[in-house]
Amino acid sequence: MKKLLTIIAIVTCSLGFSQTIIENVDAATFKKLIDEKKSYLIDLRTDNELANKGFIKGATQIDYFKKDAEMVISKLDKSKTYLIYCAGGGRSGECADLMKKEGFTHVVNLEKGFDDWKKKGFEVELKK
Image (cartoon, rainbow, N blue to C red; front, side):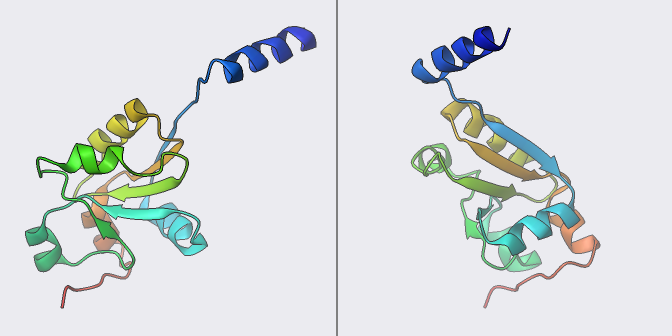
């Protein structure tokens, strides 16, 4: 049995299959991952949302509603870990699916979005 598993692992690796890990996490877990500074933080909301509600410090904005969003996302380094969020979790869930299809290694979605982050009292930056 051990030999069979080894053969399967070797064949899978040699065929270039990669498994995307998508995690849907709560605000507290998301905060811990941000604090570890091992991931790239992406805010998928619009300019208006950032201006009116603020954002999580250190986030790079990719407005998921813009026409070129999918192209911008597809050009990111697929081997990195990305922490993604939107207002309520819908866009980021959709983006996580896109990133999985594109072959990203590890994507972490703030399941209930920025609104829940803010409601839980975590720090928010305001656009200057």
